[in-house]
Amino acid sequence: MARASRSWGHAAWRLTDRQIDRAARWGRVCAAAPKCQDPQTGVISWRYVTGQRGRVSDTERGACDTHLARFAAKHQLEVAAAPEQEPAERGGIIAAAVAGWNAAPEWVRVEPYGRSRTEWLITRTYRDGLSVSASPVWLRDVPAGASVEQALPEVEAYLAHEWGIAPARPWQFRQGGAHAPVVQVELTEPWVHMPWQVVVAVDRRGVWQAVAVLDPRFRPHTTGLGDTNMTLARAVQAATIELEDGWDLGEWTIHDQHATTTATRKITANV
Ligand SMILES: [Zn+2]
Image (tube, rainbow, N blue to C red):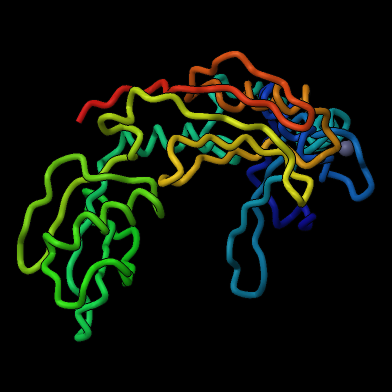
């Protein structure tokens, strides 16, 4: 830890029950003391000046009950209660996606790229003008020199497969390219009403995952559940917790090595 004279802004707070459960599933132990292996139940944080240039750094570490209390006592702090609403964070992929949906919609622009006329430039931009990405892509089934209109079916397939997005309104054509606002493909007709197939299983690296598939053409939603030695029942319980914010889950079917259910998104499309 930084010398006390150069650190300030100390804070300590409890994790939510869900965060404690998640920390256990990922095998995260106390990081507040070098050899402590107790489960994380809180967070300690402080700011300090680092290096000769005097940059300010923030540090946050997971802590067990004992070291949370010890840190609080040392710095004469109250341990703050767990936040009522968990912020979108690691594991909160669905919450983040919903937040993204509620924020400014994203736009995509498609235009021919380069002189070969076989490549297309796909630019994703937020409504506030912030660029997300500009990717030259080669669309195999579009003949060289095709018009933007001719390329659009392939472009839409690419957008759905690579990024899980679809145009929310018809394309508009301008300056040799086409642009449209885009949303998550599952929010567009007819997909908005269709159930997802959810599978909970452990992958080859020993990480339990909940994978939701709407259609093989679309990118699946994957939620990591933990990499500790969990039973299938524990992983199913974790998936139920992790997915509950964004999904209505059906009944689980438990198989030998995996479990399945169907799910529908809790959000309504309001394009
Ligand atoms: Zn500890």
